[in-house]
Image 1 (tube, rainbow, N blue to C red):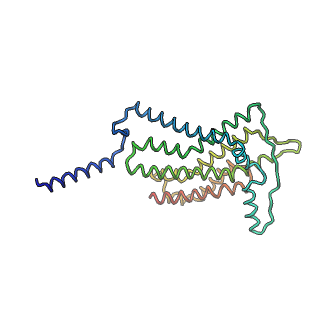
Image 2 (cartoon, rainbow, N blue to C red):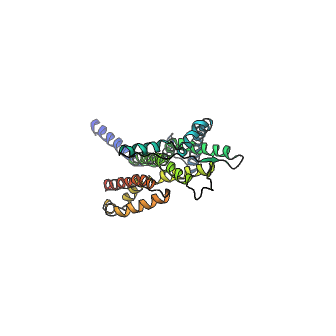
Image 3 (cartoon, rainbow, N blue to C red):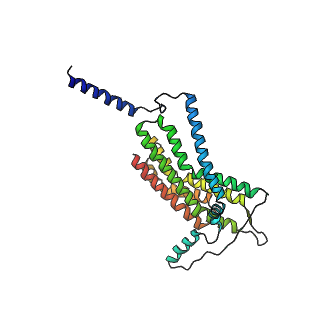
Length: 286
């Protein structure tokens, strides 16, 4: 065999090894050795420690900047919140002289330590929320060695879309759903003799619950993507049952919002737009 033929053979072998490395998942450590079960647990332990450290630092910063944090958290409970001003401008742009009535809801703390403990728990919630991009990064680093090369690129795109949709859901809850819900429920009265005093724990619990609900609901296109991949749904079926989906979305929006027509409309519209996005996502999958 001549030298040129040997060189060609070596090049073919190197190309074959490169393709096999790209096609097979990488389950080795940084030094090239296979990890044992105990090694995976050690990597997981270090990852959790780093996540807790980052979330803890952010929580401490949030806790120290108390005035800024609680000004943002309590802003949706004020009558001059930006959402009300935006709605007023939109209605006035249509030619109507519309203004929201001013309201004031007193907020109280019933236990001696409730304000301090709620401050700590809220700082922890916001610490986890602030560290969520880093948490996604660490989770991807942990599972990426077990993925194929094409699956890694695919996983990064899916994780980014999931996070952005969750952020949109959080913003939807903060600027639309929660302030209008608080205005309706906080000012609702069965009699003038009954005065509403909202506890701080009730306020934060409702705020966190609605935020998580909207963050999960906004994952509808991602769910549709995976169901389309598995062949459970198709774009023709989603298009055929648009009217049924609209009714279901309205019922779901009515379940998570107060019985107020404006709130129902403001929540139904983005949820239905998510459904239309899901139809197009499934069509692209096909």
